Image (cartoon, rainbow, N blue to C red; front, top):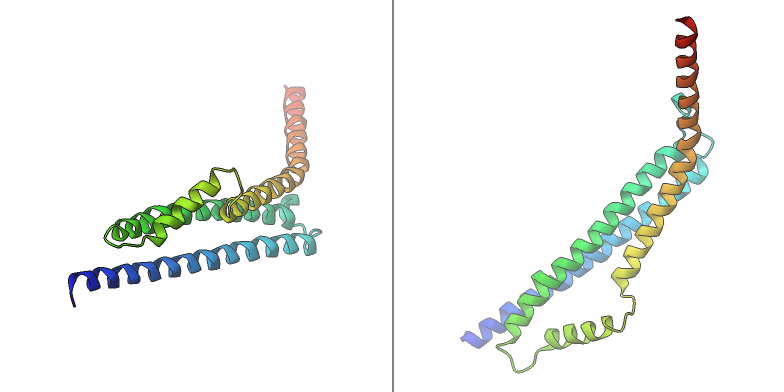
Length: 166
């Protein structure tokens, strides 16, 4: 096997690895989307369940939802960075040895497209994760407010009893 054939085989292997990595990225995003929907359905079907000290299932699920959305956003960001740096740069470097540079051309096309301020798929995923986190945060606030107010009232009553007893 000559040097050019060896370079081509390495390029081909790396391109396959990039595609496998992208497939894993889609599987991971599918997991987060399903988790997001399961948490929403769990909130709907367990809305009236109350645990000790007025802590509701909705409150717990909202915390889980915020966590899932934050992890989802970080995961999308990490995959994008890895795809750009680890795969795109390496493939472009190997392509310098070839007469045709498909990944380099593809990357330039994507960059031109992104400069037109169009949402990419990863931007949409991040947007959904942020909207989900905001939704779960609003639910969390609506659930925690009565608990916090009740706790505050108990503290005021306790302080009033202590002051009145002195």
